[in-house]
Amino acid sequence: MGIVKIDDDLHEEARRASTVMCRSINAQAEFWMKVGMLAEANPTLSFNDIVRMQFAAAQVRSANLAAA
View 1 (cartoon, helix red, strand yellow):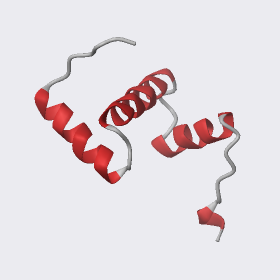
View 2 (cartoon, one colour):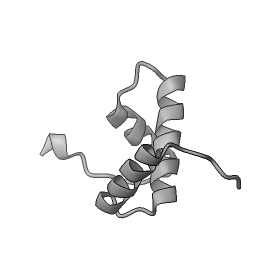
View 3 (spheres, helix red, strand yellow):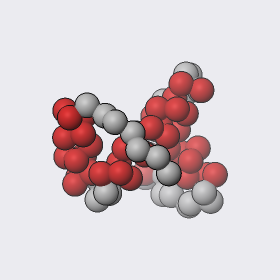
């Protein structure tokens, strides 16, 4: 584990987002970093595609709300 210095404004945005998403500030920042890394590695995928791919990798069965 390491320490990452981020801009105060970005830290505040992570704090706000973490409240909405029921995550710790660190978990929110880690989520954004992971999604950003995956987006850079897979530029043709949408955010939803990336999340769907991560659910599948974790063997999470999610409801397909679009089919309802």
